[in-house]
Image 1 (cartoon, rainbow, N blue to C red):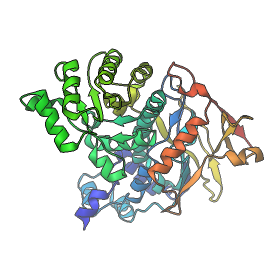
Image 2 (image 1 turned 30 degrees about the horizontal axis):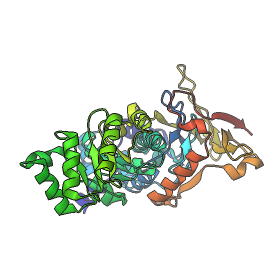
Image 3 (image 1 turned 30 degrees about the vertical axis):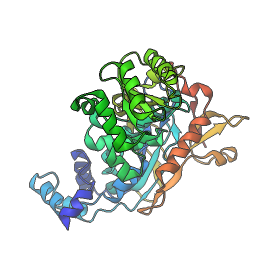
Image 4 (image 1 turned 60 degrees about the vertical axis):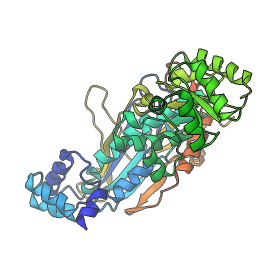
Length: 437
């Protein structure tokens, strides 16, 4: 039983110091003080106009699975990571507190209180690493994906990055990309686990395997039908397009170009396809694309894009610099929550107190400010509050479908000023205002 459970346990996806802090807090008697932790980022990656929250659903799963198994506890004891009292606490660990925050797919800005975790210090502090590792990774991918889908407009973008990332990170990346508007993934595990549409046909190796390009195309058409996509740049591009239409006929689904000057080649291939009568055959382009390359192809006769390396590496920003900070804790006398905050130099200060957040719209319904406050919420901002309950008294209450988060992101991005989707470097598209009640 433990061996099976250990496969699902997220309890050791953490840093050692989470458990040593727990041990010391148990020793001092402060471990059971009610505490409030907050996830936020002090700044967006350089030049980005907005962030995208992704991974919330995976966080909920990780909190549910945060259980220490017997083999894990034995290992902690053998390695002398913590003492016997702490091991006994961990053996019965269950998160019984509350988590609320921005719903998945929502956009965010510097200082946005993305996730608020409230419980005893003991049960909340040890969730830090697993929460941050999920949100920092998935949100970085989603932010890059959002820029790419914005640049692509109505043209579909396919996630093809599995071979450029850790095998499990690739699955999470596919999920985050789909949330931010990608239409499909090449990764079958992502399709199986999250219900994301999958796509893919053949690589250059398939063409090279056969004695001729015609033999390869014939085999693929006979196996997959005329709606398939033929890869046409293994040898001579013009000859391959000619052969593809000869084998499949004018009803060929699509051709894929994976190298060269994609804008120039797309125009040539489109003209050739039309001359051959394959006017409905689509052109898919791949080859180290990012949001800038996609934007540059906007005027080219391209019907879709496949993106790999740039997507799974966050297009130059593989993390979001999110942090998990204690912002309030129970007073020594008990009962009252006291705001606490880091006050060190070097730009790493934080603001104490449990916070709410609202996105204030202008008269046209376009977002004009992210308002973050403590104390009472102004009446005019109540309809625009962003936090939703995710876990209440240890029970998940905010789980939703990936499609719901995907639709939320579409709406949230559409409600931002138009300059949000510009790829030129700039400041966050709306400012963050502080409100103290």
